[in-house]
Image 1 (spheres, rainbow, N blue to C red):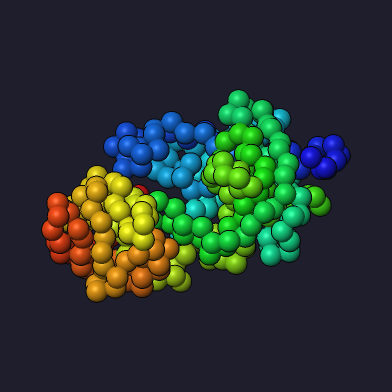
Image 2 (cartoon, rainbow, N blue to C red; image 1 turned 60 degrees about the vertical axis):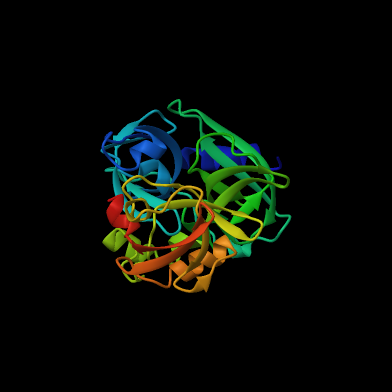
Amino acid sequence: MNASIKLIEQVIPSTVSIHVTVPQQHPSAQILGTERMGSGAVIDASGYILTVNYVVIGASILRVHLLDNSRYEAEIAAQDFASGLAVLKVPVAGLPALPLQPSTALRLGDEVFLIASTGEGNGRRINGGVLTSTAPFDAYWEYCLERALFCTAMNPGLGGGPMMDLTGRMVGVVSLNLNEIGKFSLAIPVEYFLDHREELLRYGRRVSRPSRAWIGMYSYTLRDHLVIAGLLPGGPGDTAGLKAGDVVLAIDDYEVRDRKKFYEHLWTRRAGETILFRVFRNNAVHTIAVRSGNVEEFFG
């Protein structure tokens, strides 16, 4: 890793360790657990911290540990379920903040480094690599990024920490471990926050973006077919009667062959609208009407 010791010493104090407790009855508890830990980065001296949303969804107790071992109770200032980012706020001013730089300034092959909490108070780890792709990314849950940052650096700790360039600017928020050749980690570009910073911090969410249909399903693509891998208990798809193993042939007469295209078509519909799923199950074709939900309200 080519980041200098001086640079590392400069940026590490702006990183935090996050400890979260979630009530057992919260719908996220069954998939993400009730005790969670993550990483984050101070992005404003007034106490704003940027991290990944999956760490803090449903939090009833939220604590942030700084490098100097100081601890603060935090609150969720904003959540963006579409990008997967969250902003926390701690009641203290004067914290060292990282400068944010849109990832569009990066080029493939540029060196980056990741900083992550180890979950042990002031424990931090760093790993370096190069940016290998800025391609779109779609996941098995209803999630898609038009631009994602893939790098050869493996995340050295808990998710939510910063991806940095070699000038000490934060370009992304580390979200997932992929362990693919040339794509060990995925980070969410910081522009997903920067482009909507004022709106997120004012309202706590993206109020200007129309709601979009949500089914509560997990899926994968198999030989040009979309297969339902599972459903979130109590979610719209589960309630309507979709089943794991269903092959989705079409929604509202739109033929489904690709997961990303499926998401894009699904999100042209608004939360609360009824969507007709045509699925193949037990050697027969079934049509199932699903009244879509709102993911922000379900997990709110």
